[in-house]
Image (cartoon, rainbow, N blue to C red; front, side, top):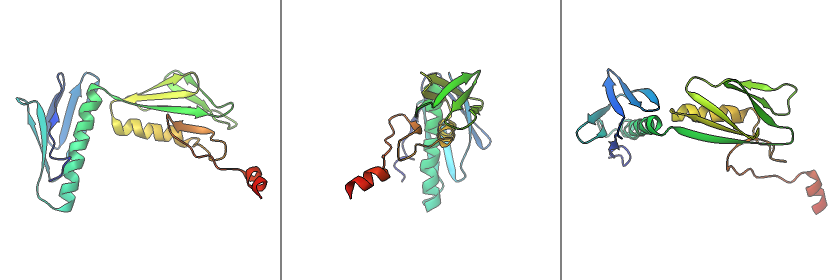
Length: 184
């Protein structure tokens, strides 16, 4: 039995979970999320106990893998509609800045023109002192994807560390040519 898949998911106060056809709908104070159910898994909602359990059809490898995945996806949905998700990015580099343009942001990353980034529906972008971005939303996958998309605009380079990085991310700085010739 999958260790993750067999754990029940607690339904917090104010969260409504329902199954319609092959989709699971989770509604909470921050919004609602839909997720297609994975084949060969069964989701059972026990309103009396206030929990959700996931079961699988058999012990085949693909069914065991889907069992844990389905449980994790549902748990992420419940957390998303109650607390939401947040990822912070830092911008390092001389002259690298970010500014708000309505709901969009304008990134100045050393290119000839600034990059206008438009977030999709359900994603909120906040700026921190023109050198930081806070990405918030209820869909964990979407928040992570938007953070990765923004980071990919100017990844941290290994010689000076300039670029966009996750808050707390460690970038190993390589020695340049000058340091290498000084050793010889």
